Length: 319
Image 1 (tube, rainbow, N blue to C red):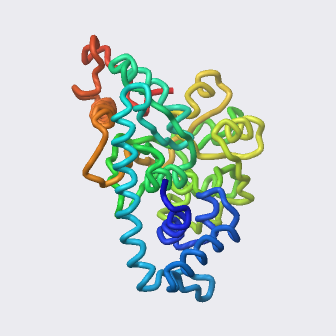
Image 2 (cartoon, one colour; image 1 turned 135 degrees about the horizontal axis):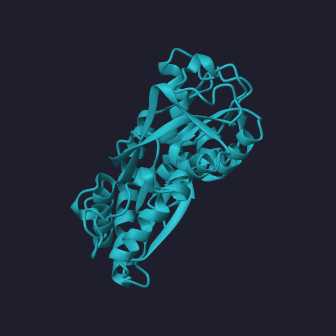
């Protein structure tokens, strides 16, 4: 429903990059630039300053951003109210989840929620962390579940649980039998990583920085678009990688891969991300309460007919 030019402008304003906005919106960069210029012509004011390859908001741009955020919050409230009015058939909750969460952590969780609340429908949209945050911001999903730190003024971020990451190598690799491994011991080896915008990649790059290494240190970083592709490449001896324990649980059990804890440990939060709007669909409140209980292992996450001893596994244990 929202004006496309305003959507494009708001994405650029939040990322301060026409290139990254084009990637998030699945548009070409010239198309993003064209939409912003059309909005500037319509408003008869310049919204961005572009100096030395750096994009900043003008004073008018900051004003438009504030109002655009309020407009999209209102759109989100309207769409949520309409879904609730339509009832169970048209009132499905739309969840956005990053790839790792969607493929390896959500199936057991959503299965438990379905058993507890069979009358509430759920639709799932998958993308990398940056995509999911953008979907939450523009109101196309009710709730995002991501595995990287998120800091956005217009969004509420609630940590749910902690995911453990490990160095992944072939079973015959020289590091395979180690109890732990430091960055210096694998940083010179061919490394396989996720694409730009991936939460896993961002967490690894931040970890490198904390360990005193530049983000570009990893030699010949081969970019692959999914955890499955990365696992296959590591098993084939193409390189090493860092992935979640939950992602490689099956391969570890089958002896196809080896996982070594990092020293210092590398952890990341699994977080629930949603808009700050006051109005929220009642069924979303039910899901939020369930998720919080499911992640912490406390009462609200125990489905009907289950006891504390039979409740579903915590999210980081779901594979």
